[in-house]
Image (cartoon, rainbow, N blue to C red; front, side):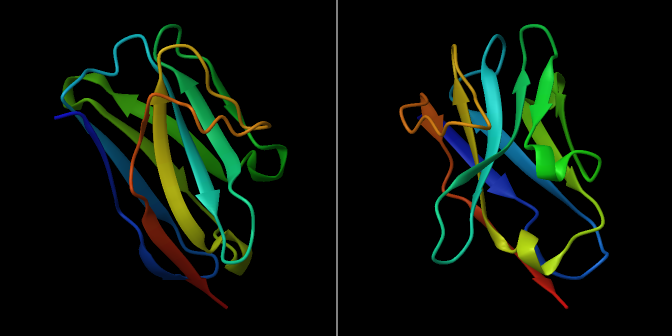
Length: 125
């Protein structure tokens, strides 16, 4: 069974850090494009960061550059999102997704091949 499972969410104080994990099973990230997305209560889902497993290129939502870092561990078939200097406005459900060809932080492509179920991040003030 193909799955993406996010973990690492939780409650953190403003200014703190969290590292989210996205573990794939049933397929290998290999040449996929993998992204993190988030959806705050009452808001549209938005792109956070994308990583091309093919060439290692990354991109980030402009507002998050410098605070968030996407990375991968090929041996563990896992992609990470390191989040630093967290703010209350970072509170959201964070999703990872993978697609053979496309990942964008500016236009949400809901047709990406696989989506996880999300992990909740709550940042208290």
